[in-house]
Length: 99
Image (cartoon, rainbow, N blue to C red; front, side):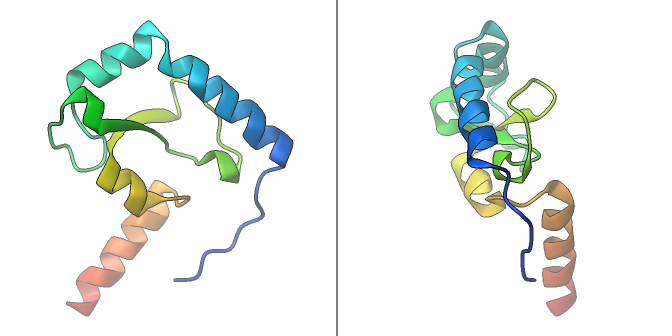
């Protein structure tokens, strides 16, 4: 599957990354980490093993807010990259069909 999208402006990316750094210091985010669950694979992890994942990636115009940010294990976040959840689901269906 080839990925095609027009990246968000450098200004948008810079602004949202700064907002993400602020959000990581919030009590809300600390509470999310304390749950210790990866949004994608639903496995339990130590809070230090979780990262912030943007459901709609910043590079694709996503925002750094509570509605768009979830906890993710490093493996799932790396696999997802700049894809959306829908694109991940399509990839999973495609790989299931090949097996």
